[in-house]
Image (cartoon, rainbow, N blue to C red):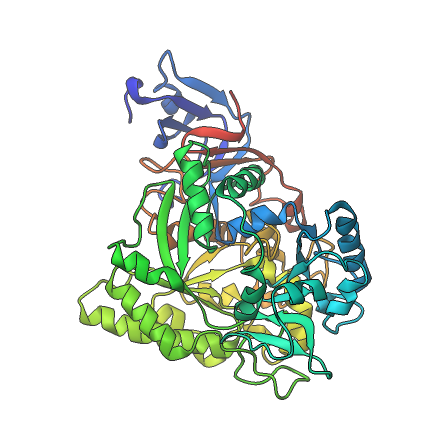
Length: 542
């Protein structure tokens, strides 16, 4: 037990789930600086308090370890809070009306940016066009990212400004959809094509990015987040460092980096985990394929009703192999976006080769925390390979409930039992790291836990049993995906993800016991307080 002189704060009279198997539930913890120094019975912990110790009565509240969103695009999410919101709309007309409303408030010639449209959720499931946007915003360049963030919808003004016409060829890994007249329709698929637009949009200053991040941080803390793993570009990294420098960063960050920055990282001699407990360098990020929404996820068999469409290969297998091999030899794991079953298969082949190289160097099998991002569809013959290769399955439970209608329609009854299925990996001993992919889907671990446990949307659809109910997992398993699993993926399992001695004092107080309530009430659960590093960052008891 700690001595009186090192206890700054005591939390007592609570129901504290520690996720430490040796001490699963305790009523009290003692904290010094940013770490937990003891956990146990009220009387034992209160006995550690000195004259200057804050004694905080939890009044029976339910407490869990701080939760980490293991896959988020933080800059994009921050910007989405002030962009045109196009999620969960019933038809194209609603989307156009929102763009028209924003155009009426925006000076001529300025860009209009939006997020979240999905033609598969509309009455008319055809891709929209530039002409549609021209009808409501002819005097502004418009760029609207789809919910999957793998397709962009632009108007004629944006096409002209960016020099995209019938003769334009998209970079590798992207596609510009052309109409029967040979002209661009206004839809660009994948990052290669969308980059032709994004490179012409004025880049916000670091101050502007950081300011938006502060607002996003408040949202994250209010949802019980104490950290996140980011997948955005270098401007995001710079803004996060600016907040850290100013003492304004209140969420812990694992900063992954895209392949174009690999040479710079290796030239500087950087390695995985460089940084501190607030910002750490993560893994090399690669895209193997696209996404289900725009039908660009790379498939073994074609999409239902689209016999010629097998999706898009964003990065060739040989290129992924070379990149992951170089990164591993220089101290970095690799995390690869793979949604279609062909993409997942190829990524597993890549990691098989890289693991063989690591074994040849005498490295421990878990030294490099390689990850497969999303694992949305896996072929039956590949189901056990993540476990065999000691890979992390980085999955987003809320994608299953958001996408199930598209999966049923375009992947079909034979494939969907193997889609969005964390149960398959858990049963084989794979470590899961859960996230939201915000702004692709809603931020917040509790929403993800609800989706993982019920396989239903907030309105109860598709049925009382949920979509593909065999894929359900328990509350305990889901919570571990946002805590212990995320910590392991970040190389922080010895200091984060549990409430126990010598671990970081990252704690979330909830208004009810999520282990005992009816699953439908998970979405009604509210965060009362969030502590990061021994300080209340949202709510509190002082």
